[in-house]
Amino acid sequence: LDTDNVNTNSSSNSTSKIINYTKRLLEEYADEIHSEFFESPEEPAKRTIDEYGDMTWTGYGDISMSAYDTAWLAMIPNKAYKESSVAEEFSLAFPKCFEWLISCQDEFGGWCNVRGAGAITPVLAGLLALCQFRTRSGAFFEQKLCEIGITIKQFYDVISRATEFARVTLNEWNVDDIDF
Image 1: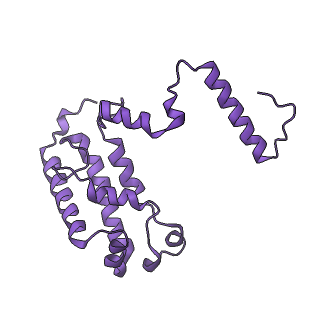
Image 2: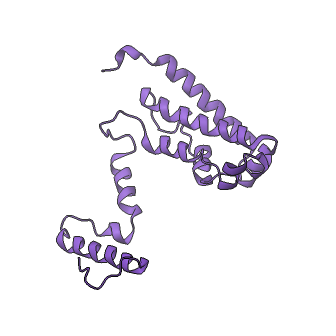
Image 3: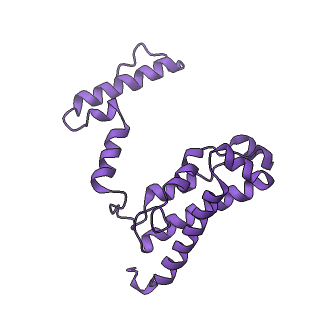
């Protein structure tokens, strides 16, 4: 990295450093880096999910990370609500994640397209996100749902299916089968 003529207090110079470093890495590791990542970063991730699915074992259990993480993001309120806790000001920082919970529930009632112990944590996180939305929006619940294009029926149908899925899955789960 050429730092002779760089003023480190300048953000544009910092950006130049990053660009130069990235170029050097690209030149050095060109045959190991998928060039399409830099053209469209979402494509390699999409291809990986398409090829291997969401439930590919990561070495940390069989929890669907995307469903679990999406549920947690769906719980984050906007800044105004964080500062005031006034239900009228409530909205979500990531409403698309909440919409995903409503629209992408699988046939079983969870969000992983599988049954079993690995689906328990994501379904509980999804239920928590849905219930927190209900609690935080208070008297403005119907209005807040409407603002993001979700009907009350959709909301309660999703909660009902997820609750039943959690109940059945927890009842079928044999803790003795866990390899500690």
